[in-house]
Length: 183
Image (cartoon, rainbow, N blue to C red):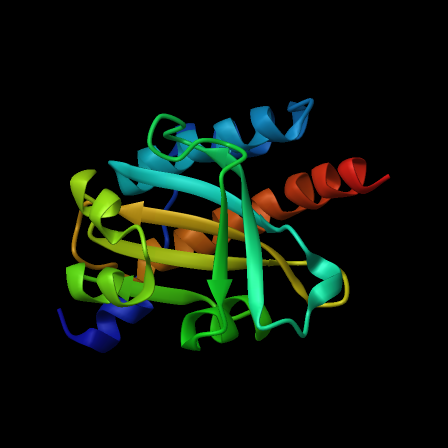
């Protein structure tokens, strides 16, 4: 199959995934339940891996030279516990994802090593590729990230489309939880 045919291939969601996203997700009572539903869809669509959601823990400091992220959800709380924080300097990764609000795709061990300080932990979990999707507020500002890692060394266009779709579905839940905390 040529690259053009691969890019044009449709994103197909199995009926059980559609059912969960259409019937179960809207009935979730809080962010944790919603993200658990979304993570179930992620596992069904993409297989083994990790899903975390981080919020910008200091949004008023948009021009600061460092960014503080706080994990608010994790599919593997033993390795990546909720509440964990990390400081990130301004790098090409932080500028792309957190400042410009653009998806970041890292494929292979070298790409993960280049971007993440915790690359050894990532490798120890057998994870080899990442897709970080910015979660945007109504003003188009990145206020959180939806982070999916996989055991495969790369992503297909359909897989990246699925990750982005799941991130969009997670956005209102994450923004709602952030508003509740900031009241």
